[in-house]
Length: 369
Image 1 (spheres, rainbow, N blue to C red):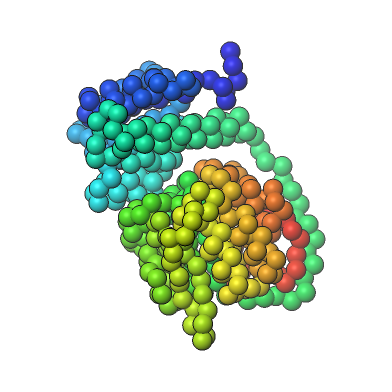
Image 2: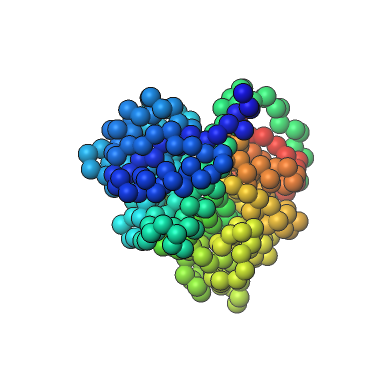
């Protein structure tokens, strides 16, 4: 028997369309490392099949008769803690909003169902590749999490050398996979009285970020808006980079504004965290608090390097509370994380930093509890 990492990925396909189930099953069987654990036509059937077929991951449609994808998602997360769920929803206004709601409710990842599912068509061929990559990613991290479920060593914080404190002038947050759920937990805990602007990059395509901003705004005491080019930055407002645009911060004549551009992808992303961190460090210097939350990849590392060089502060979400410790882990491995906090502790620590300022000088890595 091979290692957990080398085992074939067993996928449960849940969709009310028999034709779609057939197409997806064909695509999965064409992958050398995947197999179809089973199929289900609605949420209730999916719950029954999970108990019998023991899949590694569930590929879940949202719009189904009877028990829909949302009800199924909630039940799956309740009954099978750690079982990853990838939402497969249509690329429409309604489908986009539904997908964002599912991510906020705990879905691990999503893929967009194209308008054309004709075998051999470019949209369907592209979608097959996307599905395979994302199914591998969510299954890999679930297996690794299961292998590493042991108490983390309690590390005593290093002695702090403080030479005064510097006020926090802005908070910049970068995240990717698992980000919507993390943001839905973090932002509502922040006080509406925060007196600094917040900037946010969440890896998402165009149109999804508008729906995400609306949902987060509804949940939060702070105002959350999708950023526009030339927008004047406001304290107490969360400015979310729109999908497919890099967002940068610019200062001119005493006014701080946002610049959006469709420049080259960075780290395979647009928006990318790096342009935000770089530009914000130019504007806010030692007063910038940069936070890297859950996400796949290494986006944010070079930006964090610039923040640190400018005297700013970089915090990351800890591994235990992250859906994926790719982005925050990369910052830690690069020696750029000043502090590591659980998601539950992050909001209170951000508020404390804004209220009291941050030490001008303290160790490169310090774990917070």
